[in-house]
Length: 514
Image 1 (cartoon, rainbow, N blue to C red):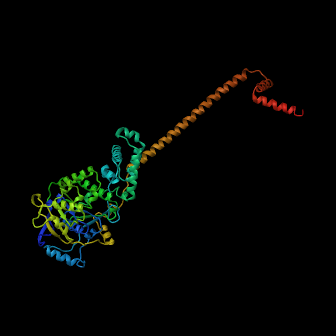
Image 2: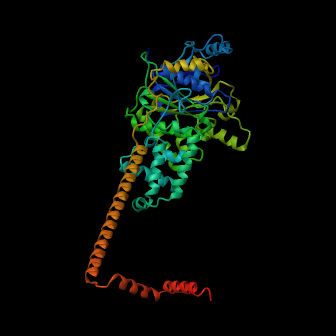
């Protein structure tokens, strides 16, 4: 495989014959692909992924609409747009155009359309988990305490049942824990438990557990040197947009924390496409946006390029937008004053081309056309050019269910993630502790009951001995006869109410006839 130092995006200039390239040395300085629905963002995403793969760069992307699975299969001359593709290739001087498939690995959080993707509660961390659960500041504080106590006690938080058990333990020991870390209210714990139930109902229970994803299985190349294209099935995942955004943000944080520094490599080590990027920033707290900005600023030194894909550049905060040096802008529509403002802002982010008005061209771009500006020598952005995007080499559109399953079965990681593991963690440890405590309490109760019974026996024995000695003394000192004793006893009874009742009964019987 020949060394590639740039990837061909399309043809620009007045007649679309000027090559518009993305230099691989600057590809890790991030990028933006934006445009209204139906303007060609998905095809641009596809041709960029293909080009990075051919250059030996692994790629991760989300298949939001189910269209990108076609990269696993070569395009065909029988395709209805074949003639249009050939004509476009000739127009933009794309002499190497041909059909081929690419090494695709399918992933799925739900384990239905690809290899399962899992992480542990501990790896997700309290910040992202709070974002996922939509917790308040107070509830997030309680969650942080749960993580802290789990760390101190060596309790592994792997899946949702581990976290539930930890929260339950926290509630039962709230008084003791509150003295050390601050108030832990049962109402906050209950709110977190309810949010976990909602998350589980959305299918997230499959996401938390083991075996956890090993990023090296994504950041890999084929024996022939092509970068693997990792496609996350997201059509169902998009029904839970917060889970989708949190998962992608978790992946970014894992890449940032685990990859070594590489400086400025000749090409990226990994390229990450963040489709539907607005979901990451919608209603996001400032702390989270600051975290994304930090990751975007520093992760380039680890050889990772981040490309945000969204409908409007205004969906991305300005501090992050300013770090996106490579840009492909498809058509935008300006139906409202707000749309017009966003359009002008998008035009202002490009280096001006004296041949045309950028703002006017953005509204007039056709499908498959885009304004392109990439970083050139010394990292300077190129003058913006109206560009005809090159046609894809792989199939445009999805493959069949059987074809997808065949790719999954032949994958280099087939069988690694399919079987879920359930090793000893917080749930089992806390359950064992509770069981041991219950046994100890039961044994203590039995011991206490035995001791009480023994004490009662001793008391009865002492009273019996005392009564026996008293009776013996009375018998030895008494000289009364049985008749005398009976008389004395009868006389004593006459003074009682029972004795009086007895007399009345006898007299009533004797004088009944009178």
